[in-house]
Length: 422
Image (cartoon, rainbow, N blue to C red; front, side):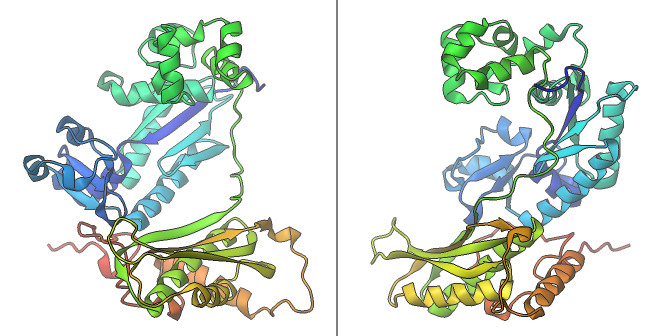
């Protein structure tokens, strides 16, 4: 159990994907916006104005009524831009705390313990700095535990009178705020669990806080349930995770924008996915001991079907883009069959170990591959993703995802940088 005197802040970007689009489209302020999933399939994010039109998360785009579409501005997912802006936001947030935890692409926990300041005013300062520096609006929730900080953030987002900042670090009137939040909105309480609580007439966070320990232990998973309740009572049980956990497996795959019928097309896709996976390995200073390649046709179409995968244990753990690409293309050739329309391909990197645990031998390749990886990462970090890439990844990439409504990559591609005419 953690120190009872801890103070956490959760900073959450408001409608993050849509807010990224609005940075470069100020004409869309207060307008309904929806962001689509891969291949423009379903709604994955939206603004409150879009929700008011009846648009729901996960809804297939083609099912949205025509009259609603006319009022809606739609964007294909532009993850390169979203990721870049997220990094900028997180860099700014790190200035406000000696320790922080990046919880997701649009959320970060800050440790404010021991700061002898007006926390509400500090939250306002955070909002102001992020908005001024990046154009992204954020909400700030503050509490003695991470769960209370999450709840405070939820209230800050939902109720405009708080101007984006809610401080629950004081015990004074805290129950009044907990009564505003349904149990389904508590961090770690899922749909099934909230339904179970509601049947017991535990409707709000306040109700859960005062539920007996015995009932919680019997019905909410023992220690896990009690941890949530203790956090609601102001007892910190979930520490700040300043060191991200290493991925146990890395998967990179996409459904194609249109079917791929050639080996060369599949090789381009697999090479591209290897580049993404290898970069993730290097970023967390790890290497993979096994590689899987798989290909699939479209099971929803009335046409010949073929799915296959193959796994290879590498001679030694590696994160080299060149080595892994060579392995992957050889594996692909072994499972590829002509005459099929392939809808998806992917790779999985497994057996991941820290670089410090690698046992090298006389047969380990020389320093050339490492130099190539350093060059790839350095150039792409400075000039944007895919500024430099392996030739086997292709140039035209006709297999790429369907992205009919994608916005320019304003911050990561020189050819798409915003142009201002005066």
